[in-house]
Image (cartoon, rainbow, N blue to C red):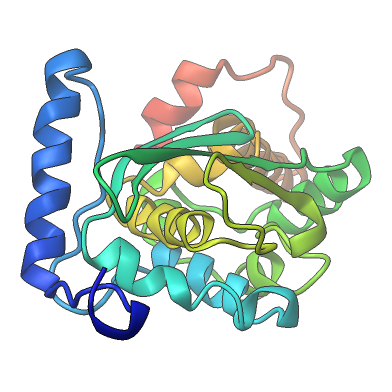
Length: 238
């Protein structure tokens, strides 16, 4: 403890070095850990990562609370972040030598929302490549990012817990992990669909089938068989 009861100042470089040491120590026990490393001052650089962070910051419930996580994630405090179906597990460096366990759960999309998404996506997704690069029609961007009705989760759909003693609704460790998810989506956008429990191949297959059915209808022809998944993805290069 420093003068007047305040903690001594710790530089950014010291914090990053401490986090790196913790990562190396954790790797000895689990070589599959996946820390979040931020290059420069920008947490997310792609459409997916930026959109994830903008969505969080657009809600009053989060906007004033998650800011404290920015410096934490930039300093390498998220030592491990694993995304699975509807859930995120993470380890975050604490102020001392230890780290805290963070679990974030995302509600599964309702059937009605899934039906709505499928209907709007029909004939609008050309390829998996365009989807993961965020290159799709404007109406799809709105579908993903619209508050309440979009695919990006709103605060009521996000549940979290942290093993730290902080009683804040959103502690800095949870906030760091929320931003860390945006950074991880930069590396692998398809993890968004894992997190939201959306079968992206089904989504694209339906879109392509709608296109083909529409083409056959316009040509006054009828299809007598269902196209297999492998044939569709080979045909359209997805």
